[in-house]
Image 1: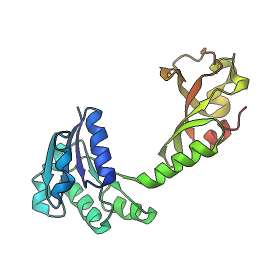
Image 2 (image 1 turned 120 degrees about the horizontal axis):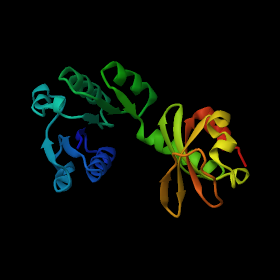
Image 3 (image 1 turned 30 degrees about the vertical axis):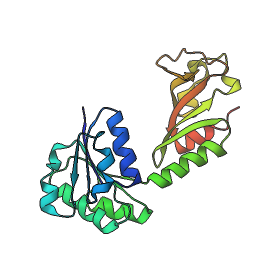
Length: 216
């Protein structure tokens, strides 16, 4: 079971803490405003009221004991920078910081963040890809150049196997699963034959993904 520290109970921090708990993680939340954590008390493992820019307060949390520390402060970039830096100085294993602007990412990484996320940008990108591309039913951007997406099986592929088509060698993508009637079926055999009315869960880089979406 993973232990997670989430600092900042704005909209993103609240959703993150709730989902992490639902996924089985032990979650501790921190915010300097009591009313922002009150309704989450029955859900999370632990909660603390406090200002994490205060070194003594942050040190009291034992940040080195958590698998991941999230800094989810969007309305005070200076505080986000300070907390990110303090977390690394105190031995945090992995720090993920939220950024609202691209330029903020550079400073957060320089100040010790292991990873920077852009929730609003990523949500917009996901929506744009999902609703603008033909036959795209879902889209998840994992990195700047790698994504996982769900598409309808191309008509030209129906009745043919992964091996016959040469999916990986020809298109440079991986078919990681098939979705049919809301059931996800992992694909481990290159002899699998594509069927009509099923969706493919595909992973690949940006260039390969774009090419994949043009197949009919």
